[in-house]
Length: 269
Image 1: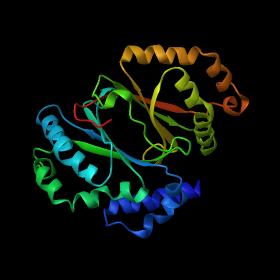
Image 2: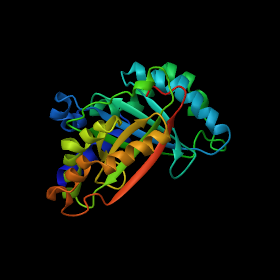
Image 3: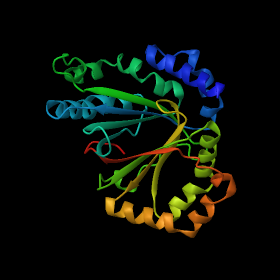
Image 4: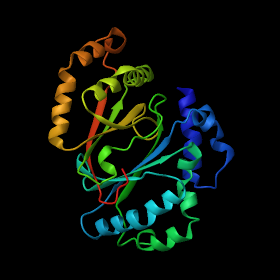
């Protein structure tokens, strides 16, 4: 518990200070970078209906994504919240190879002249006409056994697809660790067996309602999603796996947040 608090406070201090890359993040990276585990920043922009929609789309498409790509942050996902609380909202997923890369995004964006010029309408919007209402951000680390994001098959052709973003909260650290183990040691394999496209799995290092994990799935439609979930829950593999004493000794997930996201036309995921 103390290690998690130390890690979170170290990363938070670096991210919130928006300073140039510093040695403060070296401990956070450690052996994790050597193992090739990605880090993610997941943002939620809550917007008001009206002009903010176009302002955000223009900014994400023409300024933010190109600038992030110049930093080797790619692919960048931009999604509309289709089903979930606080609509309208836009989610932005930014993967990076190191903690430092992801935690210092804003500092490096502010040094990018092309970004500040192209994104000026969004970045300098007046208080009476802001570009968005509020922005929340979480800092994630990929699972050890799922170290990097996997693009869905339809991404290359910008084919029809919907995403499901799921956040599992653990009542205790023990329960959280047990659920991470459960997903890495067999649950993800049962997903694959039932046709799920799995995009990423991660633990939340900085964010609300800790401890929790976040993962993303992709489907070609909501109807396919419902069919695959029904098959998963009814499968003998899942019934046998989920009832093992080490996972069923108590409810190890205390709350689930389930969001359905639709990619924007310019999303890279």
